Image (cartoon, rainbow, N blue to C red):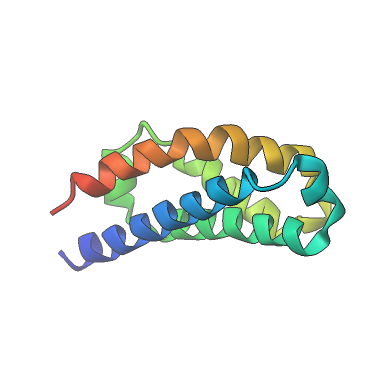
Length: 115
């Protein structure tokens, strides 16, 4: 039961962070983000937060929801944290513009289905 409570909190963190990313990506262009290191690394950090929250989810939850590519999200987190110098702005933008957009409804469905 305790892990389910923690999982729900982590899923909420993912939802909140998705909302922050999706709201703010529409406020500036890819070029503006790339030109502003503070904005750029703000976006990086929020994608990293999603990866960290996923990393901390219980194995049981991940196994119960194999429709989400948990391992891909965790791998992205590891690149952002440990391979920060390898990050390509266009890949970050694509992750936000495509992957986060697709991830949010999946996480919302899992979150809403929990007690």
